[in-house]
Image (cartoon, rainbow, N blue to C red; front, side, top):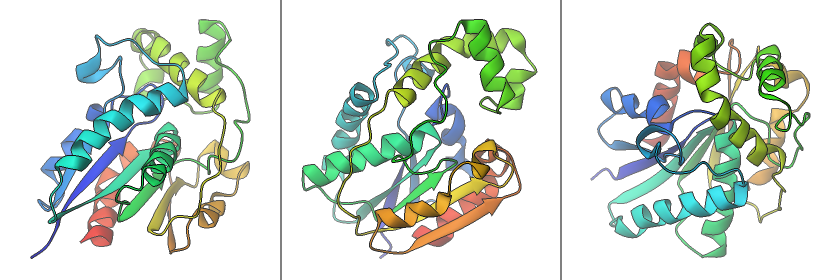
Length: 237
């Protein structure tokens, strides 16, 4: 009997997990259950206050994840995928999982970001809204559909600034090497690709690391989702 795999999903800055990942359930193999972990202040949690501390945000999400984990039976495993900011959240969730001696994921997909031990190259969360908006547009920090809709982008500025505050104030803490395989997705046209070596992810695990390049900018998670889903299926099943 094949095991069911719960795929916990984390978003990029300013985004809703449900908005990115929920539709994957219509395409992905039925043995994989896509579970978007929604951040407060967006999606179905729009009425909840935004959290600007990475530690507090991870604590919040860990409680939700833990409730899923304890409900899993012996016929279920789990994996993670996170894009950009979501990779930091996953790293910190794994630290808490290890500290609590809980069951490890069978695989983790890190998408669109260099490892968390590299500091943020810029500090922009304290800029005025106008300066902040111009800055994130200049280096490709928002999807094209927001750039083309100024009113919509203005709506998302509070979420984006909150998330950038969490990212830029994040303090990396080393952890012991993982005992599961990982996959790394990256866009060859992403502005970060020239600043950091994504290959450094191999230093975080004692198992195998697989790298997948997409000829896209930072938001390939949206434009190449079908290919990403195929890779996930072939990896997990």
